[in-house]
Length: 299
Length: 231
Ligand SMILES: Nc1ncnc2c1ncn2[C@@H]1O[C@H](COP(=O)(O)OP(=O)(O)OP(=O)(O)O)[C@@H](O)[C@H]1O
Ligand SMILES: [Mg+2]
Image (cartoon, rainbow over all chains, first blue to last red):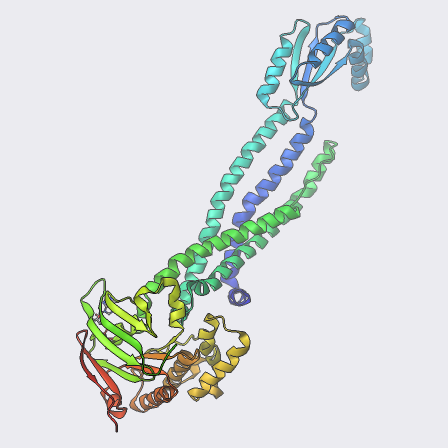
């Protein structure tokens, strides 16, 4: 195993190039995966406040509004209902907008009472939210209803789509890794043809003959994993400052989460696995061929 | 169990036909006894190499039965081939030394392949090199050796496992008369140490020089089997 590593390090340029190729191929889906994970976390943190704002008819008695809140609360798809009187709405608007005086001048409260309805499900689909809104609008007491933070939901659906895309991309590029390693090992098998023939002649088992090449594949994968890790980490480092500024702008506690050790281990594991797989294909094909042509060995 | 005058190699009407081509061996029956030294001669294409390839399971007989050390090779499974080959040393016309490894490492290869304990490797490699008189060159690289020395290294590699059988195919094909004699003396030396030696060659002078049993093949058949003449 050590010997196969030294052999690779003895030709640093081709080895480095192969590792770099593998690294870039793996960094792309891995980086995308991490970014999507962050977007998803962001979306979820917003989505926790998703709900339907239900505007009741103007000048409805408070007791009717409260009774309605009580009834809606019983619905299975509803998690919680908060009732806010027209008066409270007005207070809030006055504090928040600074247009209190104008409203005062109107003489009459132009704002309706509002129900804030939260779904029982933590992460409902867009269809579920639309259905909830429909049901609420259909009530006689209700003037209108609006789904809040609809775009957060859209974001989540986009992230989900992005995840699928990433998985597909990852599979495709992993195939690329297998091909890169396959080629590297194939040429090293060709270069060490004599060694293979002699080993078979002196009674080396197929497993023994394969072993150094499989180790090389392992090292290629591992080296590629290191490259990918470095690429992803530096990329995250690079975008972390702008992201922090952006989060500050939106008064958010959001901080970019990088490659944790779970992801790092997964990355190295995947890289090594595909390296080994590429080497395995190369070895099974090429060494078997050399075995069949063994008599060219000089009998 | 092995007793002295039992055939260590026995062919019983062995035929070999390659996938494309004529019959290389047809109904060859032959017994080679333990500790014997045998020349395998015949014109080019007579089937000498084919016979050796059958013995080390590089090829399988199309017909007939082949026993090595009492073992029927026709029934050997593919997974058993490496172990069976380790009991036989092979020397070819081209020494096939690995250019990126020292003489010592080249000779150690059969031990490495057999997962021998590291401690014994060095000792056995030295013993094998000593046998061919090349102990002092252990750390040299093959390119720095003469053709004769290279062939002796390949002999050391063939015997480092202490095989009971040594097969050689044109071992002196690349060497001049003087070096050929030297290599032959190495084989005699090994044969004196109870190793069964089979040498395929068409070097007539060499055979005259070392009067041993001579099996003459012609078109894949044994034409003449001449016992050793006592000089
Ligand atoms: N791999 C092969 N495929 C097809 N035919 C083969 C193969 N190897 C040998 N032959 C044929 O088998 C016959 C015997 O060949 P073999 O190599 O055993 O002869 P040989 O006695 O060793 O000859 P030489 O003295 O030239 O080495 C020849 O006719 C040869 O063409
Ligand atoms: Mg031949």
